[in-house]
Image (cartoon, rainbow, N blue to C red; front, side):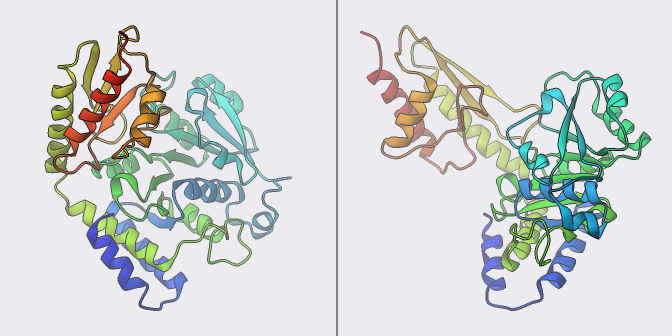
Length: 344
């Protein structure tokens, strides 16, 4: 977290305020800063998806809100592109929604009916689509169906938030941690004022709300606001160059090792955070990426690398958390482990 966030949260825990008033004030300030019609702080991005989905299903109807996750008589179908199914889509189903997979414009038109509550889009999927993003949003608008975008992993740069909101999605969510460097247990839900107000009704501090358990503490509201304010002032280009230099240092050292294939990459659709992809000749080194990850974690110092399900099973070395001198520590351990597992 930013030092400014920690300072703000420390201030908040020493002062008392009505949570609903704080929620209002922070939401208005966040909306103004980010160019959104409305905004709220959620208990993480998954919470934002659950509350936003519940909002789109019930649209403020208090009787239907009370019945969730029972959705009898309530629009409960959410359209999702087939290749946008992912680890967290269960959060869409949590309030009682049913996912309807589609691939083309024709599929979408055929799937839309009086039970359709929402159209969902996962922004960080660079694979080729059978329907363009703009066409997807236009279809939602044509049929007056709320569109929801998970853009969690697309910051930095923070300008991506403005760009995504300008595409026309009705709701967009972000993680409070990761690139925004706010409280990791917080998140943002941005978008249409009516939908944000309905989403708020489903969450804490409302006593009987479906999402009552997904509480946001007062210090997290303030911390999230300061995280956005600080991110907007931060020199992202300088930070990118710092990371790029660290990544280049690791790549240069690893390229000197026989049998390694080392590439420096920049994610196409995710946060602008460079990384090194390291592959090796399995005939020369008898170790898998999963085993390498385990040895790095359990060695000294303990080194954690990107989750393999996010790296397509390859070893990715990032620089976001590295301090001066640590890129060399990482590469030395990788080389040591490879040498210990070299075929003889």
